Image (tube, rainbow, N blue to C red; front, side):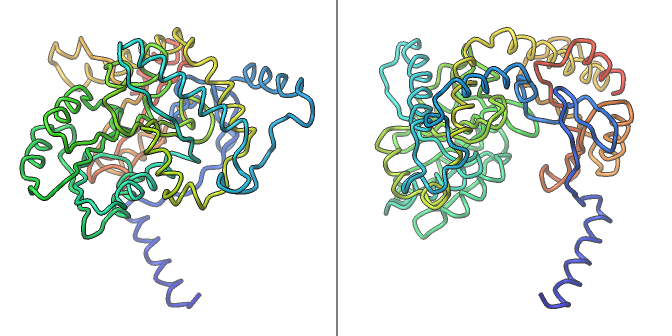
Amino acid sequence: MASSIVAQLHESLIHLKSQQQYRCLPSLEHQGRYVVSQGKTLLNIASNDYLGLGGDTELQTEFLEQIQQLPVVKRPKMSATSSRLLTGNDIQLEALEEELQNWYQSAIEKQSLTDSKSVLVLNSGYHANLGILPALTTLPVKTLILADKLVHASIIDGMRLSQSKLVTYRRYRHNDYEHLAKFIEQADETVERIIIVTESIFSMDGDRADLQQLVQLKAADSRIELYVDEAHAIGVLGDTGLGLAEETQTLADIDYLVGTFGKAFASVGAYILCDDIVKQWLINTMRPLIFSTALPPINHAWTRFILAKMPNLIDQRAHLAQISVKLSQAIAQRHHTSPITQHIRYDSPIIPYILGDNGRAIAKAQQLQAAGFYALPIRPPTVPANTARIRLVMNAKLTNEDCEQLIEQL
C-alpha cells in the first residue's frame, strides 16, 4: 500500500478520535451473566442475549450430552465446507427449516388462517437483508421500495444493491405512516410493485412498528408487499416467541418475514418466512446464499435444540417484560413529570438512555462500568447525529435486584 494512502487513513483515524467516534474491538471473557473486561467482572447489559440462553451452561451441557449419545457417524459436522448448492446442505439444516415452518404454521392456524409458507435458512441477518431485496428486484418490473428511516444498515445496503433503472427507494420518517401513505399516493402509475420495509422492533430505539397499520395500508393497494425484519422480536414477543407478528396476528399478511438466531436464540444464522415460490427464487438468485459456505451443521443442531424449548420459555419472557418496564419507568420518571410515565407500555428489552453528545455517552458508559455494569456508548453513524446513547439491554437472567442497582447508577 502506498505511504500516501496509509497517511490519509491515519489522519482519518485521528479525526474519528477527535469526534469521539473511534472504535476498537473489546477483549472479553464471558462467564454466564458476566463479562470480564480489563480484569474486572461486569454484569452484561449490552448484548442481544435477551433470554439469557447464551451463558446457560446447563443448557450447553444438556446439548453436548445429546450429541455424545449419537453414533459417531451421525454427529453433526463441525464445518459445512461448501455452499448449500454444492455439499453444504445437511440433514440438520433441512430439519431446522421444517421445524421452523411447523412452528410458524401452528401459529398461523391458531389465528384461523389457511395461508401456508416456507422457510429458508441463511447464514446471518446481514446476509439475509443484503441479499433478499436485490434477488426480489431482478424481475423486469418497475418497483418502489419504501423503508423506515431507522431500518438496520444491512437493509440499507440491500436497497442500495437493488438500484436499477426499474428500482428506486425512498425512506419515510420513522414510524410515520402518514408520511408513508403520501409516498404511496405519489407513486407513479407506472409503478407495478411497492415493497414496504421495516423492522418490527427497532434495534437502537427498542420501539415497535405498527404492523396492523402497515397491513391495512397493504390491503388498500394490491401493488404493496410487506417486508418485516423481526430480528429483535423473535423469542421475545408472542405467545410462543414468534415475535411481534404473532402478538399482533399479522403473520399471514407479511410477505417476507426475516428472523435471526444470533440474539434471543443464542445461536447463529437467520431465515426468511415466505411463499414457497419466493423461496425457490431466492435459492436460484440470492448471491449471499449461492456464494457463501453454509454454517456448520453443529450450529444448526444447537439452533434446533433451542427451538424445541422456545415455545415453553413463557416465564422467561414474562420476567424479561417486567424488568424492562421497571427500567423504562425509572428512566421516564427521572426525565419527565407527566403522570403518563406511570403507565409505560412494554415495547422490548431495549431501553435507550439518550445523552446526545458523544462525550457524555462515553463518560456515562465508563461510570456504569466502574459501578460493575458492562454498558457501551452507541454513537453516530450507528445512530443519528446528536443522539448518542447507552443502549441498555435487559435479559431474562437479570434479577430485580440487578435492575434496582442499575437504576441507582442512572
